[in-house]
Amino acid sequence: MKPSHIEHIGIAVKNLDESIKYYQDVLGLECYNIEEVKDQKVKTAFFKVGETKIELLESTDPEGPIGKFIEKKGEGIHHIAFAVDKIEEKLKHAEDKGVRLVDSVPRKGAEGLDIAFLHPKSTFGVLTELCEDKNK
Amino acid sequence: MKPSHIEHIGIAVKNLDESIKYYQDVLGLECYNIEEVKDQKVKTAFFKVGETKIELLESTDPEGPIGKFIEKKGEGIHHIAFAVDKIEEKLKHAEDKGVRLVDSVPRKGAEGLDIAFLHPKSTFGVLTELCEDKNK
Image 1: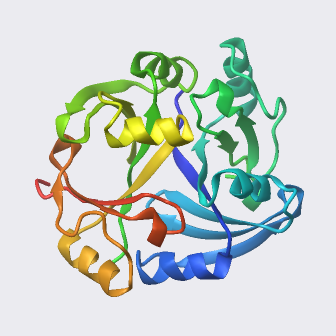
Image 2: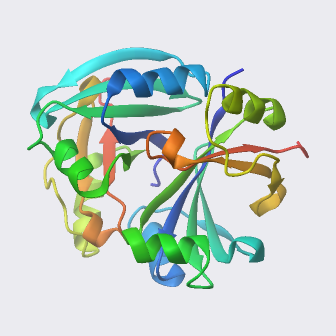
């Protein structure tokens, strides 16, 4: 079954406060939560646009994934997350189709979702996250 | 008023056919339209995920915007488009807030939408499109 919607778009930023201000003042979105994901070495600000979240990601460590991304590519869109059911089956299906997995088993991400990444080398340059809300 | 939803996510790809196959076979999405936008020197494939479209963009000219983007950064996510009402007012508001506009006046984009881009230098690295469906 196909993904139900874009769960979120992850955007790497250098300064969370300044970029929150832009999304609020220019685009008119409201930041409803700020959360630190220690595992990923980021502080994240969340906005809702229709059924999709914008997640601004500020690195808390230059050696973390967002710190390295900004060092290499600068600020910008980091990944897209698709909301799916049965995430384990989806990962198995992707692997069977020859896709390289970053996470072969789902792990806990922001907001308690089960998440797993597909490697951008296998997805035409797009770091792709699958995520499932098993609490809903 | 804030954007109602993410209208689409634009993704720059080198080969439309190969990447369509990935989005169909791995993610289970269905390509419902392929359209050439001569003005932008691209061929575009459309998929729907909930209320958001994925638009794969293959350059038809190395000197076009997608050709240059891939030359510089490689394949990957190119821009995000927010669905808005009263696009002219939104552009004026963004300009008043100090945002540099790529298009100070909306122009016609794919699927007949009125579109305008904000410059990534003013939007923390994210090429940002506003778009309005005036036919709805």
